Length: 25
Image (tube, rainbow, N blue to C red; front, side, top):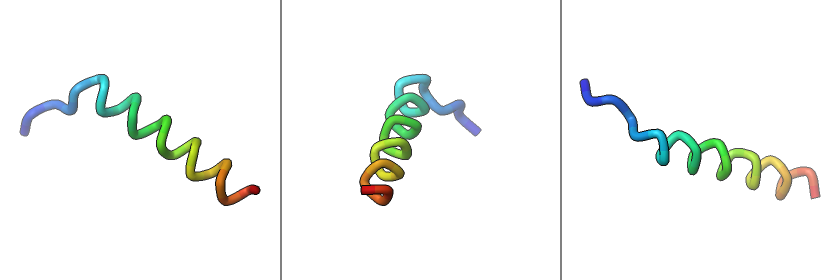
């Protein structure tokens, strides 16, 4: 199983935060 790139993890976390903020608004 290949490891996920660090950039993918960062983008995933950033997208999660953005989605959470959008839902709160």
